[in-house]
Image (cartoon, rainbow, N blue to C red):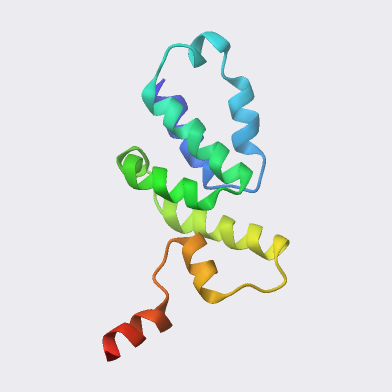
Length: 116
């Protein structure tokens, strides 16, 4: 099951390609019902991303970060996907909102706080 989890995590870094969804369909029902916590975490994270619930993704990611540590550039790949999804959805958005979606510190906001 550990290998399946690693492959699923890697496929998340390849969003918006359909790798993750296709791989999920290859997992048998008995494997899904085994109660593997790591598998459940990855599937939940994938649902967050596919549904565009980016704030939910980052909240859960903070709790389950250790599961994804072995995957190189995981956060960078997820941010790239979020940027792509946002560009498909919005014509323009406030920088602060984009920073929240990407879970990064707004540099302008940080500078203003440092000036005080």
